Amino acid sequence: MKYGQFRPIMQTEATLAQADVSELDLVKRCQAGDTEAFDELVTRYRTRIFSMIYNMVHNEQDAWDLAQDSFVKAWKSIKRFRGRSSFYTWVYRIVMNVTIDWLRKKQVKGVGAEFDDAIQAKQIDPASRTAPKADALPYETMQRTEIRARIDSAIAQLSPEHRAVILMKEIEEMQYHEIAEMLGCSIGTVMSRLFYARKKLQNLLRDVYENV
Amino acid sequence: MKTFEEKWTAWLDGQLTGKELLEFEASLPDKAAAELEKRDAKKLGALLKRELGMHAMANEEFFSHQLRERIARENVEPGRERLAEVSTWWTIRRLFWTGTASLAIFLVFAVFVMREKNPAEQSQYLSQILNARVDPVVSPNATISMFEAKEDRVTVLWTEGLQSLPADYAAK
Image 1 (spheres, rainbow over the protein chains, first blue to last red):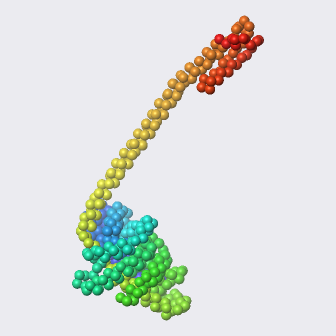
Image 2 (image 1 turned 30 degrees about the vertical axis):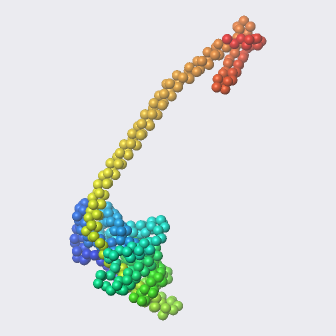
Image 3 (image 1 turned 90 degrees about the horizontal axis):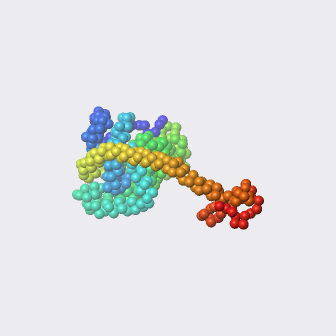
C-alpha cells in the first residue's frame, strides 16, 4: 500500500465544481495575457496563501510581501502551467519555494530575533487579526494571545523545511505525496521531517496542549 | 518505508495497516508510552489546527490593487530589458569596431612610419662607417668601423687591414 493516497489532490479554496470549469478557463485566459482573469484567481486564493505564509514567517508585512512576490512569479510563469494539478496546488508550490528561500536567506543573515520581534509586534498591534474577537473576556484574550505567541515561538525554532512540512500536514491537511510533490523531495523525507518537527513541537508545547 | 521515523510517522497518522502495523507495534519496546505519545501528537495537531487557522488578511482589495500595478509594471519591464540588451550590444559592437580601427591605424603607423625611421638610423650608422676610413696611402685596404651607443656613452672602434695604428687614429 502506498501512503498518503487516500484522497484526491488537495481541495482548493474554491469548490471543485468552480475549479473544474472556470479555473481552467481563467488559467487559459491568463496564459493569453488577460490580467483580469489572473486578478480573479488571486481574489480566490489570496487569503489562504497569505495565511499559510503568515504561519511560516509570523509577520504580516513579510507575509504580504512574500504573497505579492509569489503571485508575480506565478503570473510570469503562467504559460508553463500545464494543468496537471489545480491552479492552487501549482501556485502553492511557488509560494512554498519563495517562502522557504526567504527563510533560508534570513537564517543565513543571522536574524535571530525573529520570534521576539513577532511577539512584540503582536503585543503592540491593537488591530491584530490574531487576537480574539472584541467581545472576548480580557483573560481569554490574554490567554489566546499567549498561546499563539508560544506556538509561533516553537515554530520559529524549526528549520524552514520542517515548518513547511508540519504546517502543510496539520493545517492544510495535505497527504505525504502532495507535500513531497510540492517541496520536491521524497515521501520518506517528508515523513522523516514530520517526525522530527512533531517531536520538537511536542517538547516545546507540551504544557500548552495539556492545559488548554 | 525503511526508517523508524517513517514508520513512526505513518503509525501516528494511522496509515500503517495489516502486517506492517502488527510488526511495528510488536517492535515497540513500550507500547503504552508510544500510545501516550500518539495521543500527544494528536493533541498537538489539534492545537495547531485551532490556533493557526485562517489568518485574515487586512486590506484584501489593496493587496490585489498593488499586485495589479506591479504586474502592469512587470509587463513593461521585459521590453525595457530588451532595449537595454540592444543598447549594450551596440556598445559592445562599437567597442569592437573602435578596437579594430585602432589596431589598423597602429599597424599602418608601425609599417610605414617606423620603417621610415629605421632606415634613417641605419643610414646614419652607415655614413659613420663610410666616413671611418684610414689614410689610403699607409693602409690602402684598411677600414675602421665605429659603433656608438650614445645613451650608454660607449664608442667601439673596429679596425681591419691596418699596417700600423695611425697616430691620430686616422678616422675621418
